[in-house]
Image (cartoon, rainbow over all chains, first blue to last red; front, side, top):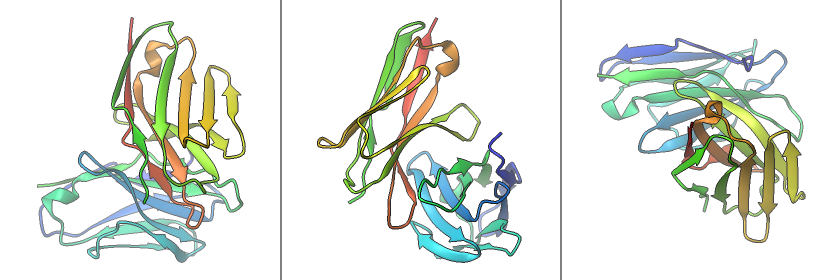
Length: 113
Length: 111
């Protein structure tokens, strides 16, 4: 158990819909990262937050957005869903400092029908 | 550009050693990692190596780093059936701390 929790575990929805994925980082970790794992794209970095502020952005679509709240949990919002958005979405957290080991949550499997 | 490459598949017999290879492109990466993903599970950090090291050993795991060739390898000694999983190498982009993953190597351990 990494200490990072993600909800829900599975999500099935229809095209055009909007969903919210939630992540609680390990206690004390200030950084949260979101990654997408799909069959065709592999594991791709989406976005990072550090203590509530966006720090880095990767291959994140404009239809997707994220935020980190004062209690450090984070949400990834996916809207106008398409079939190709079906993937496993991982959240990771790390403490501040140069070593920066990232601990991954169990992921949310999103299926868009 | 960013690109981390791994071979897709490796099959070994139980008790043998496994060697999983990876090449990366960002020579400025300070840390390189190996993660393990079992079916239906998340990513588990196995080990990491700092870029100024050539080798790191951690129980059955040995990581070798050839910085000149940008080549990273993970050796698993006495491979067990429980080691069957997908193994990802990743480099950390120092400017953002994001991880850039390879495509993963599926390790199959035959009894």
